[in-house]
Amino acid sequence: MKKFWQGALLWLSILGNIHAVAADTGVPDELEQAESVVSAFLGALAQGDVDTISQLLGGGFLVKKERLLKNPDYSARLVELYSGTSHEITRVERTADGKVAVDVQLDMGQSGELDTRFIVDNISDPVTGKSKALIVDEID
Image 1 (cartoon, rainbow, N blue to C red):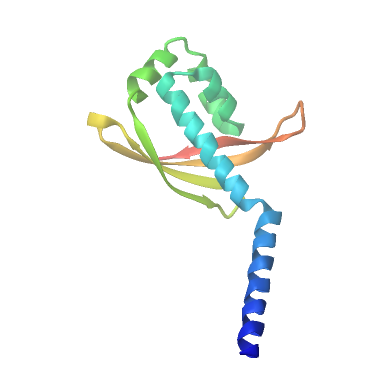
Image 2 (cartoon, rainbow, N blue to C red; image 1 turned 135 degrees about the vertical axis):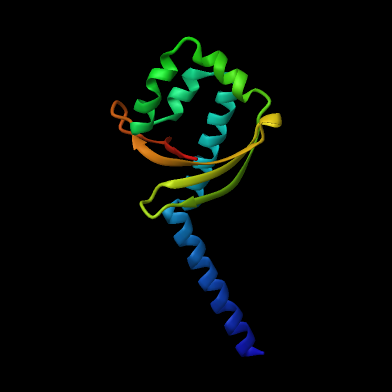
């Protein structure tokens, strides 16, 4: 019986250390944050909210989308395309380069389903110096 309790205590100790390491790396928080950013982005698409979309994109992806985001007709086009669309996040995982990939399945009603992957990275704000999770790429 004594060996049983020693083994149980050893396993509890190991599990406690694993939990502490996971908490120190912040991995769960970063994954949840990436998922939250993608969900907010998809909601902004459905509402045609180009200001929010601009705030959720970063890096070269923002540069690539800037012209569209400044087009006065783009907001209405987004509402036309994405209004009534639902989404399901199917997977969230860390990539080899330390970013987070968020796989999404969009149900676009009669238009069908679309699978896409968003890449989220923590980008430092040049003004505040604080890091912020932003969508930096989309892979169809």
